[in-house]
Structure formats: structure tokens, C-alpha cells
Length: 200
Ligand code: ATP
Ligand code: MG
Image 1 (cartoon, rainbow, N blue to C red):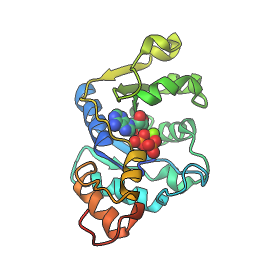
Image 2: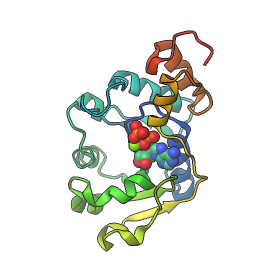
Image 3: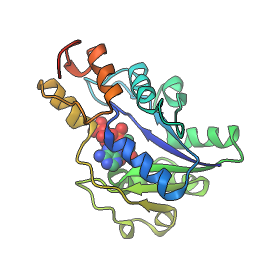
């Protein structure tokens, strides 16, 4: 089975994440994409949602899609989430699966700095998608990494979770920038300064 892993903090999950997962699935005929929220160390950002809320948002977003699933490993493990540690565990648990790790252009550029990247490129293939603000330039990567990055085409989506947290804190609507069920969850739970029951 070819499995895509969509890692992130998903704080909140937005349509850029969903489109990246779908573009990778469609382009490389992945059987499933597993969304895996990372545990956020307390210092990453102050207004962030809890692991439980981030898992719940991901679950809301994927539940109607038979090809998408949520993986709670990193949130349950706590501490700093190292992809390598997770991938070792996944390959031990599912030795017959072939794993693909889906990332946006900002993360593609950052790959040389990933902890254990030498071992990661032995274990899986990355699928990179475009994202405004960072060129998707494989030539800028060391060859041993670039050789393990495939590209999937999708329309550029100029949305980030940081932008959504800021908009929400300013009282601006984030509706339709996140899946409807995620919007409902954010509103119901009063996350990101959104008042429970307010119209946007
Ligand atoms: P933050 O602003 O908090 O960093 P984010 O929008 O970058 O949030 P993450 O959870 O950090 O979201 O990202 C998870 C993965 O999804 C990363 O690989 C990132 O590059 C990718 N991604 C996020 N937003 C987009 C987007 N708009 N288009 C393509 N890929 C994206
Ligand atoms: Mg990010």
C-alpha cells in the first residue's frame, strides 16, 4: 500500500492542507493519506490550540473522506515530534506499506535541516507542493535529498494557520478558509478568540 503522511501542526487545519493531501493522493495514486498532527512544544506559539483540539479539527476535516485518516501518534507521544522517530515506528508497525511524506514548499526548502534527514530519505519519498512565498526549487537542495522529492501540482493557496489565527484574533471571518466542520468546531469551542455562537 502506498500511504501519504500529511504532517503539520494544523493550528487550525485549513484548505491548503486538504488540497495538498488530495493533490499528492491523486498524482501518485496513494491508497490513503494519514494526517498526523505534531505535538507542539509549549514555546512554539502562545495562542495555539491544544493537541486534543488540533486532533479533533483534523478528525472533523477527514471523516467524510474514505481515503483520509487521522494518526494521533505524535500528539499522544508528547514532547518534541521528530518525524524520523514517527517514521521508524510506522515502518515497524506497517512493514509492507510504502510511505510518502507530503510537504509544502516552505518545508521542502527546510529539508536539509530536518533532524535525521539522511535516514529519512532512505526510508521514504517526499511529495512537495507549491506554496506562495517560497519557490519550489529542487536544484537548491543537496542531490541526495532532491532525488527523493516528487512534485505534485496544485493551485497556490495563500493561506497559513498563522494568518488564520491572526484574522480570527482581529475579529475577521475565517469561514471557507477552513473546512466547514473545522469552522463549526472552532466556533463551538471558542478557539482563536472566536466567540462561541458568533456568526464569523
Ligand atoms: P503555521 O503558519 O502555523 O506554520 P501552516 O499553514 O504553515 O501553519 P502547518 O501545520 O505548519 O501549516 O503545515 C503543515 C504542512 O502543510 C507543511 O508541510 C506546510 O508546508 C503545508 N502547507 C501549509 N499550508 C499550505 C498551503 N497553503 N499550501 C501548500 N502547503 C501548505
Ligand atoms: Mg507552517
